[in-house]
Image (cartoon, rainbow, N blue to C red; front, side):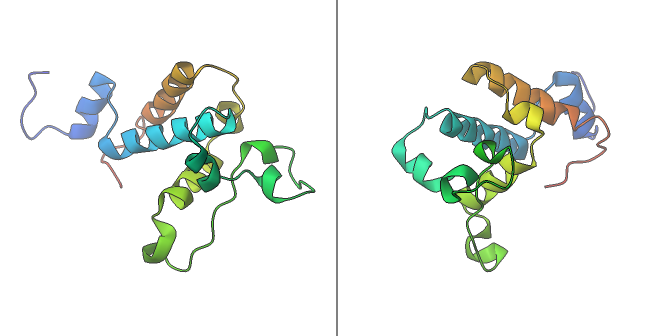
Length: 128
């Protein structure tokens, strides 16, 4: 980009259409959760990510098949940063239009990347 070394990194990432590393990790977690919902993942991932519909016999939400049960934990430092917890929270926070899309894995990845790139519009600096 021929930018100054002190240029704002968020501006440069926007110009390139790139995601920050912490958002790349979120994209990968979302894709894995999408594969889990479509039963296209290893068995151990299915055990880690349980849908609301599997846990409860009577669903309280019509989107219970598209949301995950967040495992219990005491403190953020004692299980709150685990794969299961962070993936469930991230997936449940996505808009329903993204979660309910019936597309291929690569198209879903593109939609998620666009979702995170759109969140950079109002951003001036990265917050982790």
